Amino acid sequence: NVSCDSKRGALIVLEGLDRSGKSSQCLKLASSLASQGFSVEAWRFPDRTTAMGKMISAYLSSKEDMDDRTIHLLFSANRWEKRSLMEAKMKAGTSLIVDRYSYSGVAFSAAKGLDLSWCKAPEVGLPAPDLVLYLDIAPEKAAERGGYGGERYEQLDFQRKVAELYTALSDSAWQIVDASLSIDSVHKILKELSIQCISDCHRGKELSFLWP
Ligand code: NYM
Ligand code: MG
Image (tube, rainbow, N blue to C red; front, side, top):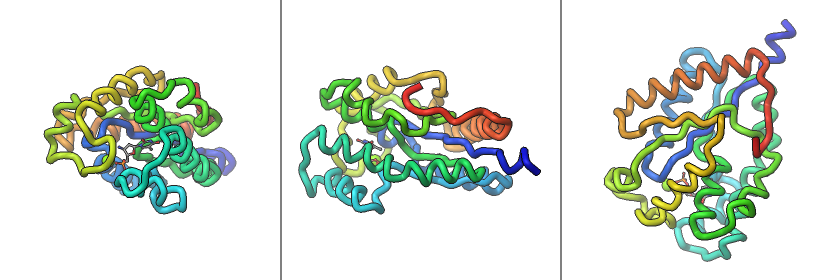
């Protein structure tokens, strides 16, 4: 069946401040879509398992210091090293549910004062998400949620700047979801939007590339 073979998977990205619930929702979404018969995988960036990912992890836990632009490019390179696998998975029909992507890359670096267009440049040419689920939460509320994990960037003032930058990055692929709702309510919204997106991709929506 030709039309079935050519069905591509979707690239669905979850974005939001630290403690907005992305990681839990990402796994919950992937497993519930899988149990309904969709071919899906849960991914995350940074991917801390690669050599570059280990350097990023050491930076985030303050074991290593790095120049702001150097770490920015490393986060981007960590996506580029996964690009061919991402594209191969989607081509083979698997949808990827990804915890953070280029928007985190740009928002967190620009929040340090780096130029926005400089931050966006290394992301040019990566696969563009078909859907960005932005888990919207007030920075103050996120900070109240059981505290941050103690990594770099996990401070209220910084997260306020990140929130502003996310707003500047939103485009037509974005859906803003109220992350202060219950876990189940958020899940239900994410799932409906994701199923719609996956079926658009199955029906032939073409993959595009950053920045749209
Ligand atoms: N982060 C994440 C960046 O600064 N740039 C990036 O490109 C990405 C993907 O890393 N505070 C930041 C955001 C987070 C931190 O992410 C680690 P996580 O989801 O907590 O593992
Ligand atoms: Mg975190």
